[in-house]
Image (cartoon, rainbow, N blue to C red):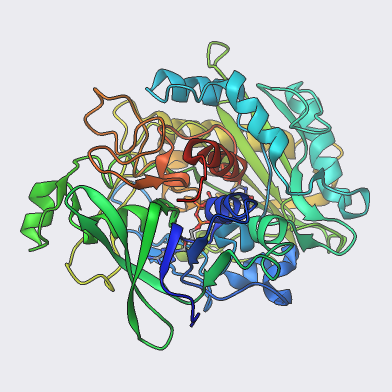
Length: 510
Ligand SMILES: Cc1cc2nc3c(=O)[nH]c(=O)nc-3n(C[C@H](O)[C@H](O)[C@H](O)COP(=O)(O)OP(=O)(O)OC[C@H]3O[C@@H](n4cnc5c(N)ncnc54)[C@H](O)[C@@H]3O)c2cc1C
């Protein structure tokens, strides 16, 4: 534990994706002091964390908070939501696929009440990012992934994209941009890019690692600091002279607010948590990118080279009036049968998978507490596939059909021996929907649980300056503030939220 007195200009709760950006940027001014409260250990020197291709080994392990979902009557109740417990947060255990959100994503935010967050002003924040964002390197481009790209082009007539961040797109297939260092497969996570270069050099930056924030300290409506428990079980109040910045992510930011008495008054009372501030939107608007899977056995082994085993992807726009792509696919160079195995399917020795994914799902979920005990995990009810028009499930059915068209097309077809799941005999809408929903998985993109919105939006938790409505001295900056889901993978959006938060905070010492 640090011997510095526990009062800082800014207290950043969560040294994850957005938190690393904010802590690094604020301490560029040597007169500003910042404490980062991070539940996990450092990632420095940890090859298991820093090597991108080892990401799957982290899921469910000691660095994963591992949140279950509540029963999903129309989906897969077995989904576990990985959330990283390590410096850099989920950018330290994710696949680092890097998409600048599309202009239509930001404009949707602005239309949802996030004034100032439209595509034009947001462009500058992408340019500021310090991560090494590059296309999958030539040496990492697996032959079967290349053939997937060519087959998708021929089967669907979509353009091949080289560099998805170069210009906005509505459809296309190609290798992803990743935040990594191809020469050694090391991550360019938020911690690597923003904290490692400065953390030993800035006396004004204090990292309190393996320290858990369990309740905010408020004086009336003003946030004064946060109560934490250190690794050794010591309880401390860490005070903020200027502001508390909550960056604990889409699960843990609302969780901390609820345990601090900030949230829907009725729910808090029912659990015996004293209500400090009635804010009905906390935990509402739980978003995700669900996806399904279709798996093929290949005739033999697949070449070994890869950046992280899912290096290429496809975007399709089925509805020409849709603002951006309305169906996305990851291509996995592995037979991803974890969920189908529960339905009795067997994992082939060699195989590949395509995962149809819903860029703009319509179902909305909710996060809530089941206990006043802060150590009990919150309940996550994604309400997968519950939207009125059945848009979400229909998107996956369309996806499976499109995936089959690609699989029939050369040069991919020659690699594939047979469709393992759902299996060629599953053809009808109802059967495909049943399969797609029961094996549905997440790509771990929870967002939206403290959404940003306009003053007349009752369920908005933060205003467009990221300040918690009705409170002083506290902002939220992480994936929880997303008003709507980005059509693309959200990490770059979260980093950009971090960069913009720094501008909004201003960062003067007191
Ligand atoms: C397995 C996986 C793969 C993914 N792949 C991609 C991808 O390829 N591309 C993409 O765009 N997105 C991907 N994502 C999603 C993306 O990583 C997240 O949306 C993003 O990193 C979230 O950032 P955040 O700042 O909101 O939260 P996080 O990065 O999760 O940061 C939260 C931090 O707060 C800490 N914390 C939480 N609660 C407390 C507390 N009470 N006290 C102290 N510390 C606390 C945590 O330890 C963590 O470090 C993936 C996610 C996962 C899990």
